[in-house]
Image (tube, rainbow, N blue to C red; front, side, top):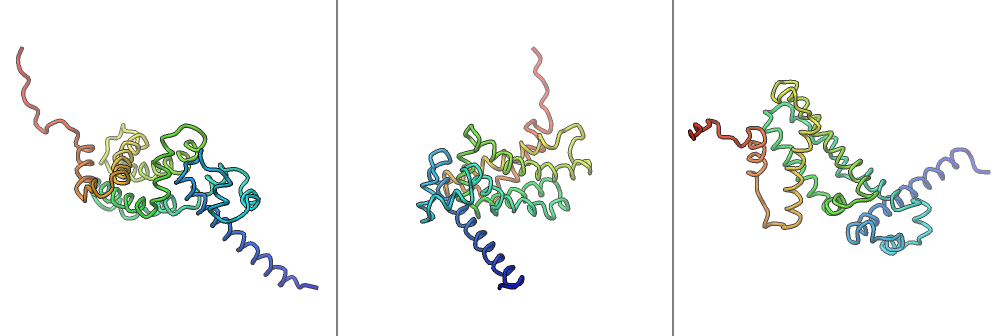
Length: 217
């Protein structure tokens, strides 16, 4: 008769094996989704990539949507959002935004496969686009808004501005440049000058500091 300790050990081993298998399925699912698109990919494709049976996939994930939720929930990209603001509230606003842009770019670069998948599928309609918005882009906007709220409290941002709306503007500047880097590669290497310049325009506007006098009609 097995002791309680033995049964607990066996249960722990099985749980670790199941978790490792889920991680393998998540990696295989992301690879297939990135290559074939969410709509074009099938559970058969993922099983083939994983070299496993389709029954094993359905044991862990009932639908492709479930697998997509898991991919977005446990990836290093969104996990990186948790620490991306560290120390930024202690520097001037323009510098904070530029540093945020550099950190976000590095984070996307370190997760190229997921980034490629996100850029393509965030443009699509359907359930996958809604899931991606809720679990990735809404989280990113929230982090940017949190940073802007700190500067707003210090009087660096006009009080009447909605920081979440402003966060979408800031994120759009960042994401559009990151997307172009992925499309055009080294040819679109803007170096360290783009983000400071872009945020200077955002913060200062496009009007000249001294307006020229109006011409009389």
